[in-house]
Length: 205
Image 1 (cartoon, rainbow, N blue to C red):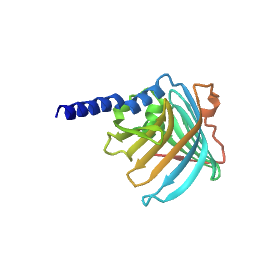
Image 2 (cartoon, one colour):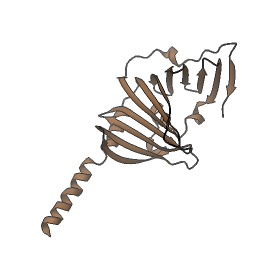
Image 3 (cartoon, one colour):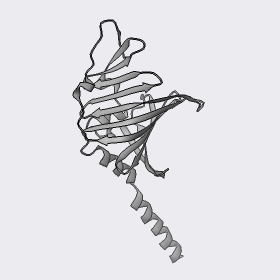
Image 4 (cartoon, rainbow, N blue to C red):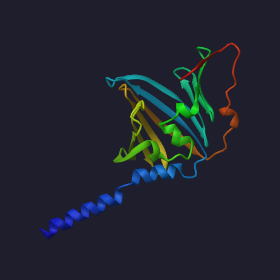
């Protein structure tokens, strides 16, 4: 019995030793973050887990409050946050939709990625462990009215390599990040929306 107790205590000790690795990676990623640039690949799954699209582009972040998603394939689209508004720019349609940033990003990963807002404020954090050579975290929104059901984050050391968003409609968006550059100079012009006279401007919620 003493050997069994010793083995059980050893397992408990080991589990405590590895607990929090994913959370530490998240904290290390956010600590001192000022800018981030990365190429990304985004895939979408519908409620039947069928792939509905594959997109590629460039993600640029500048804290506080600014980011830009440049989709280059299969069609061009830009999602730009300038610190006050979020602009969804559809080049082919000559159309842009304007959202008030504070409300548009509420309860989303963008809220803690772009500001120093605590992750715990909007999410319950669950350690998932190591898989595919990455440390995984599951974030469960605290707001029962959130469109998101859960967020998965995966890290290699302090680098964010994977993000997965599951919404209440059964859709899943997966992001893979690569060619990551941290805290390098970023042109502030990237976060300025310049309107065009012949484009339609729509007001979002």
